[in-house]
Image 1 (spheres, one colour):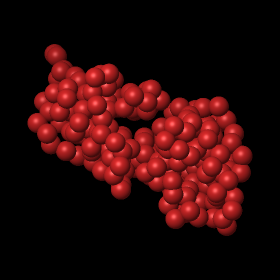
Image 2 (image 1 turned 135 degrees about the vertical axis):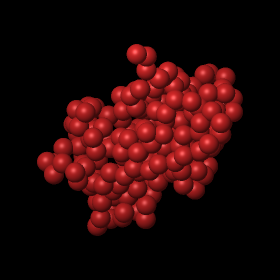
Image 3 (image 1 turned 135 degrees about the horizontal axis):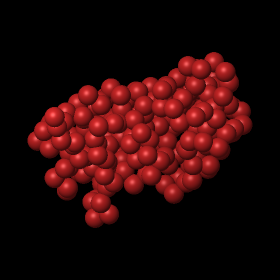
Length: 198
């Protein structure tokens, strides 16, 4: 008995960390990296969903394959939801993860509220152009100092509320992180749609 053919989906990112995370979460499909010649639109949307959809649409139009894209970031309650959609370039267009995190730690330290949330929107555009968006959230608090060597971005200072043991995302195993992360939750929400073979 033969199973249904596996679906090939292009992932609209050049971030190796995101590609690896999605590959671990989305079983049953073949994820391929974004070809070098594909041009993605600027992430200038006002929402994570708008940015994710823009990237997924561009990847599908230029490759002919079904495409998946995400946009994610961190929202600090004490900063009115910043950095939000500007999380990847909070300290400047070419800022490193460390520079972005340092700026957020400095700004949150000046507020009375260390509550933060990771937010992820994942957009899927099928071969026929049908579009689906799902969102995932992970609530937490911002540690005063970075800890841990795993993860990326703001993970070394993000203490998830789900575990109640004080560890940062960067101190969790990959399995622990996927179980509660914003990207993991969004990916699991969209997985049934992504896995359906054409």
